[in-house]
Image (cartoon, rainbow, N blue to C red; front, side):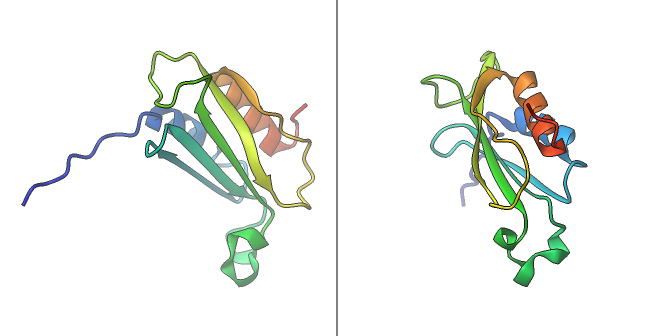
Length: 123
């Protein structure tokens, strides 16, 4: 039996940075990374504690979803890339936060914008 080699996703270090920066900012935060069709970091969160989700369903809480991808025409992330793109995918209609605008720039600035948005201080 052959064993499949597991490879660390290209954006794993970025996902770890996002997880460390956001883990205490909302009752629920999930940060995952994927290289299947291109490198990305998915951020799912909720301003409602998990036990308060009606029926235990994520979408019944005050949810939000954002994604970080490679900037420009790149599809697979490389540590030498200095810019990434972050954008909001969806949000519960009753979440009272300013609109999160798509942004391309340095990784640190993307994480800073994400943290400020979750905290409610995004401008």
